Structures are given as C-alpha cells and as structure tokens.
Length: 448
Ligand SMILES: C[S@@+](CC[C@H](N)C(=O)[O-])C[C@H]1O[C@@H](n2cnc3c(N)ncnc32)[C@H](O)[C@@H]1O
Image 1: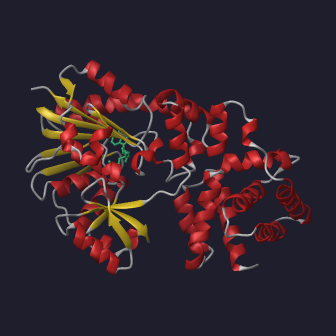
Image 2: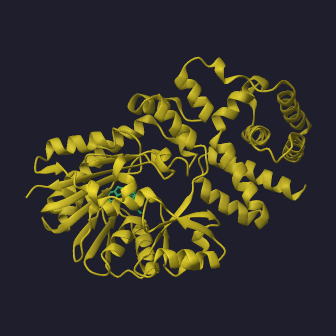
C-alpha cells in the first residue's frame, strides 16, 4: 500500500463512522490523523477528500445509482469508497481518473474479497466510459437543486418558500465551498495592523476584514495553532458572530447577561469591549461547557467575566429583576447558517427539529426579560436561516411582551458594510452576502 492509499483508506473509515453517526467530522478527522500517522503533507488531501465527498454525497449517489445493481447489498465501506473515488474523478483535476480508480481497487482488495474489488473496478470504469447522467432529467426545480447541491429536499423547499428560489440556490451553492477562517483581535492588547504584522512573521497569510474593524481573514494556515492565539491576542470567530457585540451597543461599567454563552465567543468579545470595566455574567447549561468559557477568558486575560452553569429558563431564581443593562440571548438553534463548516449536518437535521426549537427559544426569552432594566437592550441571535426560529420568534415575543419594542437605532451601531443589509431592527445575514456564516440578529428595547 502506498502512503496515498493510507490516506484514502483513512477517508473511507472516517466517512463510514460519520454515516454511523459516531462523532463529528472534525473530531474524527483529528483522531484518524493521529491514529493512522498521516504525514503532515497529506493532511490537506485527507481533509479535502473527506469534506468534499461528504459535501457532495447526494450528487455522487445520484450519479452512482444507475451503475450499482444491488444497492441494498452494498456494504457501507464500499459505498464510501465509490463515493470518494467518484468525487476525485468529477471534482479534482489534479488526480488522474486511472490513479483514483487504481487506489480504490487496491483498497477494495485489501478490505474485501476478489468479487468486491472486481465490482468496484467495474462500476468506476463503466462511469469513466459511459459518463454521468444528466441533472436536467430531474424536472422539479427544487428536487434538482437538492441533488445538484446535495441539500435535503425539505430544506431546499423551505428556503425557496421563505426567501425565493434564487436566494436558496445561492445559499446551497456557497455551502459547497470551503469556509474562510476569521479571527477577532483582542484590541485591548494589540491593534489590527500590529497583529497582522506579527501573524505574518509567524508565517500566516492574513488580511483585514472589510466588514468588522477588529477582524482579520486567514488565507493560509490555521490560526488556532499560532503563538498569537496562545498569548490571547486573537480569538477564532466568524465575522457574523462578531456583529452581536455591536448590536448590543455596550457602554463602560455596564452589567451584561449572556444567557447561552458557551464556549464564550461573544462573552469574551463583550468583555473586551468593556475594557476591564463592568461585568459579564455568562451562563450555560453544563459545567463542562462553562469550563470552556473560563478557559477562553483566562487565555485572553479577561477578568470581568463571571460564569455559572445553569438552565437559563430558571434564571429568575438566581438574579433579581432589573439587574442587567443589556441581555444577550444567543439561542440554541438549528444551525442552518453554519452548514458549510459541518457538512454532515445536511443529512442528519430533520424538519421536526426546527419546530421543537422555537418553543425553547421563546421560553428562554420569557425567562430573561424581567432581569433587564427599563430602557435596556435585549439582543436575540441565532446562527440559523429559518423564519420559524428568527422573525417568528421575535414577532411572537413582541406580541406577548408589550413592554418591549424593536430598536431601529441598532443600525447606527452596526459596522458600515452591514447597515444596508438591515431591515429595521433585524438582520438576516446569508452566507453569500459576504462569505461569513448565516446569522440572525434582532435588537429589542425594554420601554422605560
Ligand atoms: C449558539 S450556542 C452559544 C454560543 C456562544 N454564545 C458563543 O458565542 O460562543 C447556544 C448555547 O446554548 C446553550 N443552552 C441550550 N439550552 C440552554 C438553557 N436552557 N440554558 C442555558 N444554556 C443553554 C448550549 O449549551 C449552547 O452552548
């Protein structure tokens, strides 16, 4: 077996385990890299083949289907091997088809018997000879988009109904591309120019974000491994997620509640903006998650964050009414805005999950509101793209809580590039807007 077959065999193992729902793709990838001793130079190929095959799963199955006689009898690893090889044949120019097929047959010989390697060889050579079938055979445009971009039909239908076919198509297409890594600079410690210089000296290729003043984009390397990260100069965070601290409109010496705070991306941003004055109270359900907030605060040298593990639906038992100047509810959600980062989600999410979430989101909002001072700001945010968890939640909340109103002055608090995307006091960012995660933010004010 060559080193490259070791990489491909590892990809098949990872894909098998993801399909059995054993773990998240990023965790599996790291474990396999260690266990199978994948060389540093091959990690790129391993990542590309794993995520690429996963991203295109439904499309690959559509193309494979006519060539497989007994799909039900196909063992899971053989299915993954065929998908991964076809992915290389269709989407990677740098790997010749014959090399990809040869590697697949070698893996099939090693893991299976002669019959299986013959079948793998036969299927792949037939596709090479006859070509793939035409997507235009699928007449329904939603179904076609679903197969073309490998998103479940229910989701494409839902997005088409809510935002129109063109927006849904743009969203599905951008979800097939690799996400950009961005980071937030801890401006209490270093300014953006100096940080970019330091990271360049460390060998990273970074540039300024055009959207958020304290953000940078990473074009080469993983900033989580940098010295600047260890020293607390930066935090890995998506640009959309950074906008939440802007929407809150923090002022010095304030007390701010972050009711769903782990792992602390937004809490630490708020604490940085408070510049060591004031206080952030950060809550999350489980102790092990709260630990992550503490670790991040310690790394960044922030002393104004207090954490507590609790169910925020019971927050009134722990705090007096009118305690906080501002409250953030970054709610648990379906995460449809971050699918690009977690492609396995496309196949595991169910439409029923979304309905269940709305009721939790409303319960959390109901619980935190008495703790806000009159005149205070309540920001509700999610990393999802779905009206039932976003606009519908906020509408239902405002109908019930007549002492609250939408706060259109949030527009002035937002970075310039974001202002045109705002609709009154609400913002729905699509991943295609400027390449960041899909995100929703609403700013509400408690009447005086
Ligand atoms: C979207 S994540 C928060 C991300 C975080 N704000 C950040 O920026 O790093 C939602 C969080 O809500 C927490 N959560 C879910 N239900 C909760 C509840 N009833 N009370 C408190 N936290 C809850 C989850 O554990 C999860 O960490």
